[in-house]
Length: 218
Ligand code: DX5
Ligand code: ZN
Image (cartoon, protein in one colour):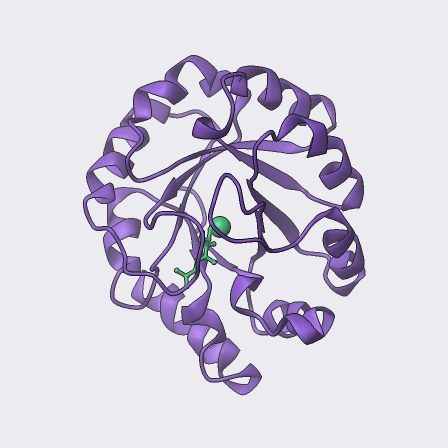
């Protein structure tokens, strides 16, 4: 069984002190730093670009898990790789050429992830399984933190777990992960849990307790 990892999403951090926030969730026991990149086009919100990733890179040595919600995505892969991403995940819905994009991410020396919206069937990942290090299942429709968990995705997690078999692939979930929902996704087979609002609620003094509570619940 793969190690269970908690990935605080800095979408819920205080953007006015992002470096400090990254250091705080690192010190509080976050395993990966999840970075949500939105373009106001693929999703109805705009967040951060490669320069922000570069600016926060010196604040943590942990894995930078970059979730790209942008279309087109290909022109920006190299910039995120150079900015310090370790894992780069792209949405299957964002490009008709996601096989090519995954090859590009690997050629940049980074781990490649493919993301599926709640309404996207997992059959699209079967042809690219040998090109991915991670499958990210959205458990909300992407765009905002703090949305309600979509429980029906758990069945899809189970099917993907079976499809992945013994390949070296992480299964990550993103959206509405809390102490209540963490056990559901872990039981279904997810091993990387993104948590935005559930990590950052209560301010810096609460981060360590929040992360530990999600880990224990899972
Ligand atoms: C949503 C983002 C998530 C978001 C999750 O589009 O991809 O990473 O930060 O936030 P919570 O954990 O609050 O649902
Ligand atoms: Zn995300």
